[in-house]
Length: 262
Image 1 (spheres, rainbow, N blue to C red):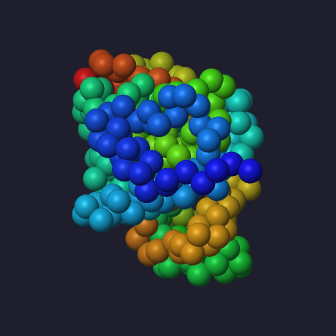
Image 2 (image 1 turned 90 degrees about the vertical axis):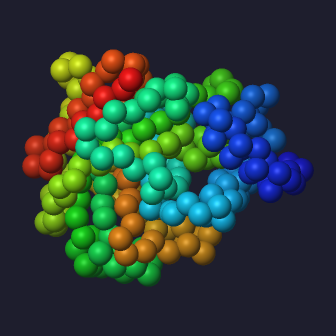
């Protein structure tokens, strides 16, 4: 059995390193000192510290669900993380690459919630009741692993690599969530098509990711709330970007979103 680490002290160090744009340094000598459960405890403690200093929780993310991402990371489990209001950028944002480490992006589907979700069963019974809108967006990542091969512990403790989103000002009603199964999403960098996929690349589609998240959060006594943003995981790989790059995420029926890197 692993010894109990000092989660509070680790969380303080994790947040200090994140603020300095060098995330995850606590894993520089490996993350095997943490179990996956302890890694989530660490992530939740970092979230508590961020809220205590005045940051607003905007929602949550699901990651590592599609085969494309699992092959890229060499991992076999979904992970979950927090989304912060201070890291939501508008369509057309110009991002400073020095504020990230190993900046990379994903194109993915997201939901805005119309009501609090009391349970996964309630969501499964009436999904349309809980979803206010759907959108395609750009997720931002600090794409850096301090250990090789990557571990679930490091990924979880580092908030699933998440460091922000670029969202469209225009969102669409989610119709019926099942329609996102056939919705195409494409990622372009400097006009070059990097990849195209549909919501079917996610097990159970985007709604399946939301159900997984609801169940996972319930274990920690957390309930998804009205107005929160939920990122459902990328059906495509993670793509690195560099200064001068223009990134666009297009969808067949949802508004496009774009960003620049300087």
